Image 1 (tube, helix red, strand yellow):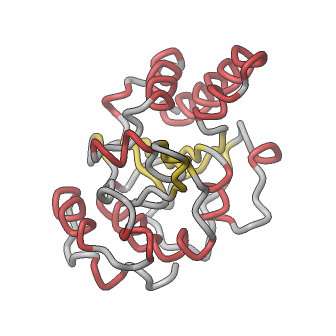
Image 2 (cartoon, rainbow, N blue to C red):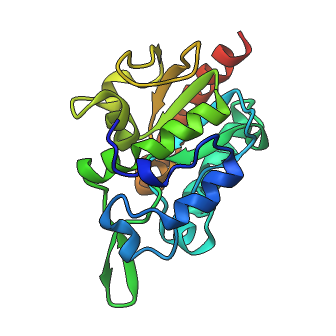
Length: 212
């Protein structure tokens, strides 16, 4: 993982220390326009970590991940899959919101590979603290952050795969399962129910692996 944000990551991290320290991060340029950095939230001893792309507009304003419409879809899907939303730890690979402004609207832009790499030390610290048994990748950006630019959700989704050997992790390393980002359900329009059902099915696989 790159050293971009490493200078701001505290020694002996806790989630509270990370949440405070990340506000001072200057590891990439995204801090200049974002309202604030958004660290993960949830049970710091969770067996399952959910890893998305970056905060959205509402998350940037409120300072917590997955509190917008996509978060509502995710919580509903987790519950339907048999996973209590308050038992997981949810975070993003990038901690600042990247966007462009159109009128008064802030339109989401996917983070660049350099920005993802710069933010990687924060994720490494979260993994050190939480030490999850499993990580669910929500969308392609999260998958590419771990496995490289060739990663495709459509190829990997719904099955348990090994943690990348070249990346730091807890011991034992968590297993990984990829699925779509819940925002993809909202974008699906006519196929929304099918997209949602697929998300739930993937989360059920994660629940079974966790309980097994």
